[in-house]
Image (cartoon, rainbow, N blue to C red; front, side):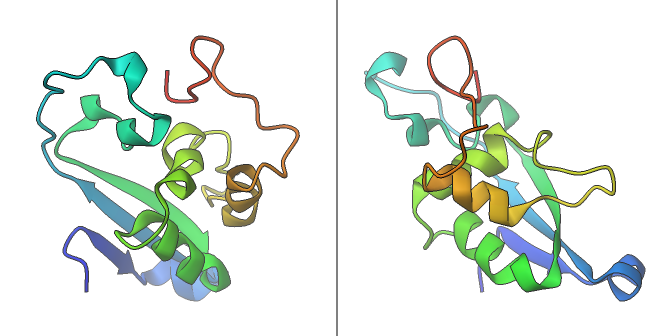
Length: 124
């Protein structure tokens, strides 16, 4: 069990086959003796300005294991980029996050994945 990662099966889960995943971002200390441009993109995930925040993702049941791995402490940090950086873009009109597309972005297989204009950081 991970204390900062939970899944919730609610009434909607029974109706549409989705599950709610929530990830807690604790208070993050400020960078010390590090310049932001020297840090890899993944060092900024989740965004540091969102301390003490629960991030919510509604996903299809079959995608829940992949999402839990991507967001959990045992996933590779790069897998979190689409979840935090492209959350709005990968969430459809029903409020369901597209885990398969997030995986394609992580693997560099999605040509539509356009990084932020500033520094190549979708979180910028």
